[in-house]
Length: 151
Picture 1 (cartoon, rainbow, N blue to C red):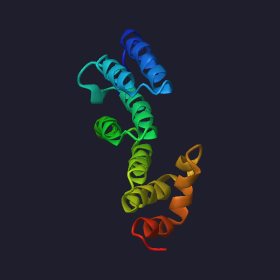
Picture 2: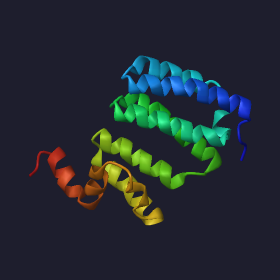
Picture 3: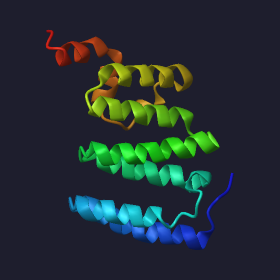
Picture 4: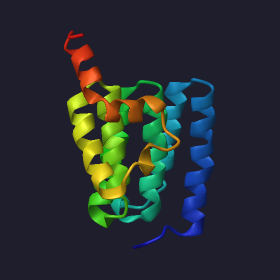
């Protein structure tokens, strides 16, 4: 499992900091541009580097938080590609896929992903996350009924 050399990773960090400064300022345009610039610092094939997953995850979460779902999905797919290559973060990836489905309103798929996570890893992935995620998981029908217009 290769680790990116310090010099290249420092470039990722340097540009990545600019990206997250832009995110904190709600400057989504620059967040997107700097995130891509930092991504380009990873040598090809990107899915072969351990650090790729965590970087892609941070960017994914930023876009998800801002409800920029198209961009979030791009970074989620990058996480998937990396995990398919290295298989380091299966439960974490499934949890984040569930978050994407939840945030986009596909509660059935969110529940299916999170059920796999809970069976494999317990409830630990719900810790330090939005309380509504665990509330949903513990009572999914309440959310699914609301979406379908049922009470």
